[in-house]
Amino acid sequence: MSRQVVRSSKFRHVFGQPAKADQCYEDVRVSQTTWDSGFCAVNPKFLALICEASGGGAFLVLPLCKVSPLGGLGPALRTARHDESLDGGLTLPLREPVVTLEGHTKRVGIVAWHPTAQNVLLSAGCDNVILVWDVGTGAAVLTLGSDVHPDTVYSVDWSRDGALICTSCRDKRLRIIEPRKGTVVVEKDRPHEGTRPVHAVFVSDGKILTTGFSRMSERQVALWDTKHLEEPLSLQELDTSSGVLLPFFDPDTNIVYLCGKGDSSIRYFEITSEAPFLHYLSMFSSKESQRGMGYMPKRGLEVNKCEIARFYKLHERKCEPIAMTVPRKSDLFQEDLYPPTAGPDPALTAEEWLAGRDAGPLLISLKDGYVPPKSRELCVNRGLSVSRRKATSETSSDVISRLEEELRKLQTVVQELQKRVDRLEDTVQAK
Image 1 (tube, rainbow, N blue to C red):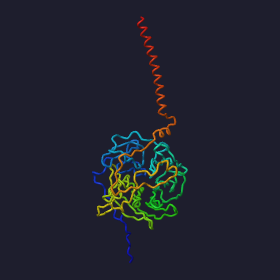
Image 2 (cartoon, one colour):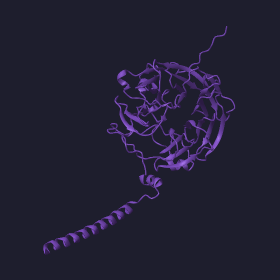
Image 3 (cartoon, rainbow, N blue to C red):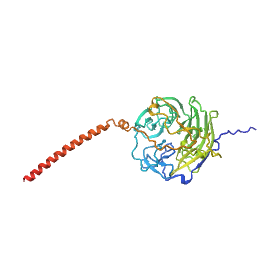
Image 4 (cartoon, rainbow, N blue to C red):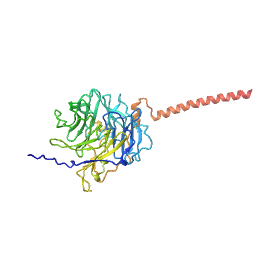
């Protein structure tokens, strides 16, 4: 009788630990929208989530050091990473945007920041158009029109250096696109046979991971080599639940986490460079189902507790942090768990990336812990932003000249009125 060999992995015993009640965010009404998104974004200082409100489009910004919500309004279905510089959190609701991006003709369902270029933001709308923005000027610098995606875009993900994007679409096609050229590098028809939405993310070594459904409506996860999309490197069927699986990939550990909308569990797999490539590790389960999920960047984790991932699980009226931890007895820094990871600083300017340059993320060490910067602001050229949206915008000198002209006219009117008053007084005195 042959003995089954158990594959060795330092991540086999990773376990999930939900936060205690006093560390959860209570009384937050999560959006009821059925869009297949995580509805949540996290950085080392703040949590942002899409919440329910009349008219839609509302979101909350919550300081991680507090558990009471402070809110702001703005249209969104999906949140992306956000600014880490608002020390002390928000003191008033956000009512005036730093910059307004106008270009889509229908609602926007996806936003994704470029991983290494400053101020470059991608958005995908229900108009089947993907726009790439230079947020610093408020201008749409690249457009992928409906000739690229003839139907709704389900998911978009940047490659690690931001040179490519991969998209999944309602037309059942998986595409890898060079956005600066507007060209489809390669595409795959029906990576999953089912009719439900497919989601795709780049993973290590030129591979893409997709989640979808079989013809019999079974949930699937597949791994693909971008150079050979004819057949998947690995295809696994999971269960018959109906919730779309949202993938979150950690390039430092090569672990991918699958969080299903409406599920009460998080599955995780390890990706290796040799067959069978995709290895199931374990599953975290809880009693309550999730409406959405946020994922903390590695620099926001507690390395002294061997925490390798943290999720922010959205309930109907609560946000619950869940820490994923590797059990270790030593209190020393575990270098094998925490290689240098992506920091918050951009490697390129928007202009450099648009000119054709690519660069991987600037890496930082977590050995001494990560301290978020005290001052980091979004640099917006307001003059350019306004002029692009309003061709007749005035310069400062124009405004001053106009005001001086109006002042002269008012002075003339006052002088005429004074003369009339003088004449009336002379008339009264004469009588």
